[in-house]
Image (tube, rainbow, N blue to C red):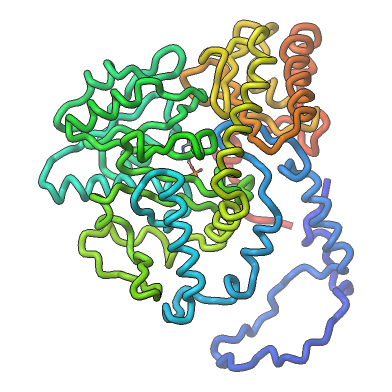
Length: 477
Ligand SMILES: *Cc1c(COP(=O)(O)O)cnc(C)c1O
């Protein structure tokens, strides 16, 4: 067990003191100065270095392990993007500076907005939201404000039962009532069922394309047409854009409002939960409602426009998570249109390659073809009371990060796998072989191994709810 820094701390230890010739108390008024010691642990440099290196080794990371976390698009995040986001010109500016002094940063925001429009077929974007879920929330506020402006009382949002949990949560948080839409056995939606739900109160329908089972909605055109005829808007959850780049654009499919998860499709490390960016995009008739400030190009100068009377206001401080925007822009420029398309083609190919290797052995509810991810339902082959959670834990013993499990909710014992475009055939083969071995061999012949897993990890099986029920938030050493 790695000890806490407080536990290895002692008064007589101290890091070697590097003299600094900058006066540390420069300009700080006396009343702002600390008068008690900070109480930081005292350790030698190498102890500190080893502490954090050892801790990092106990973790699973994309840089050490295949990370097939469905829906999360754990692709390679080019390290050069970190370097670019750290350039002084990006890193040493402050968002409160006058616009004239941050023209480069504003130009990047402006250009990224244009690129996202090109990739998605939308007319305008705000890059402010800090995550996909916040993009959804901003998008729904835009929808609410739009209907208010045209004096229509629409209080309901249709959300399929296959949707990510953030969809109904965002809609409820924005003040709407949810109308659940049941998906078909292959996870797709029936235009007929959508039509039956379309009443004059329906403000929007939220769709994920390809859906969370990795299937493209075949009836999307009919769904879009029927919704628009009813005056209902179409919301696109763009978390799965990694499957479509350069092939299909949500804007062309009829979507009015969308969000894109830059940290997923456009490569920012997001394994620890952030930071991300969830730009919200709209068709031209909704532009007035986007968050302020808008970055506009006036006579070859970039200006910040706060004067948008119909805007939903601000959803995040300043311009959003700017370094994530820089990384996405660097990624888009490095790959270009051809490269982005190729990324999606390869992502879909990799997923289908894996699916083909599973499909004769383990049930795939959505059928034998997929987009960039797929969902297995091992229920019928699992024996001895072994469940998907056990399979996921056993994968940790083999050094893998576990796939997404029990999502989407409509698939029993779901295992959702997204390999992404940046993995080699050898990695995919090895993972398929391991997962098949756990499900079809170990769970049948040595079930205790699976039920007791993990045994090779720094901590064994955890109580999954205790941390939430009995949080220990203070170190009491
Ligand atoms: C990841 C994801 C979201 C939420 O995005 P965050 O950036 O995690 O807030 C929404 N929908 C789907 C389908 C997702 O995969």
